[in-house]
Amino acid sequence: MTDEQKRRISSLESKFSNLQVKHLTLQQGEILYHQNDHADSFYMVLDGSIELGRTQEDGNSPVRIRKDELFGLRDILENINRPETAAALDHAEVLKIKLLDIDNNQTAALYNELLKTKPVKDQSTSITDSALGNNLYSIRNVNGNNIISFLGLHGNLSNAVYFKNVLFTQLNDGNKHLIVDLLACKTIDSAFIGTLIAALKKVSELEGSLKLICGANLCSWLFLITKMDKVFEIYSTVEEAIAVEH
Image (cartoon, rainbow, N blue to C red; front, side):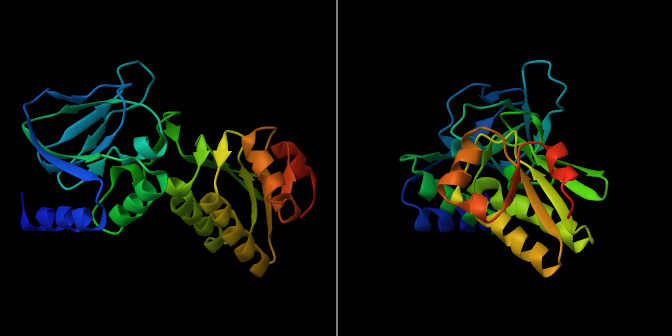
């Protein structure tokens, strides 16, 4: 283990008391965990590389995790079983960092701490929603409206900052009329709502528009409960939003 790797782990252990760190050595082809296994640990590659791949034929390409990259924490945040199998591509050394007491607030704080350091595979530019196996978002333009579809099942702290960057990139590129499609989203938390509010504020400064597409699901109910339906323009379908002039 390099001095930099030791420093990172020592920093995490000093800030979070619920971590148990174990050094693992894997031979080529050895399985770290299987698809559908319970997720209670995340990992850092010390040497070699790990491949994340699904056992079923779903058209997704395997993801390669290299030295100094972290992976696996997002599965805990999303409270899902492992969406893929992790196996050593060659002789590999990894740190298994187990959360002894899984607390959502602590886990989210840990995730944010990791983002300040080296690469976290869960938050790379090719980020995918593990429950869907698709890109986390898609963008298309219809009649001058940029439609940004959030494809994750859960809008929460683990992807709020990332999605904020997606929205602000569109605004900074001169696309001031945005439609955010949240139909695929089943749950949404205050951190993600904060991202939408920040985008709305920026849109107002640009004299643009921000419309939300939210169907009859938990996502739309939260907007009603928090009275955010009085703040945002909310529509049931993309077509309905497009029909309303800016």
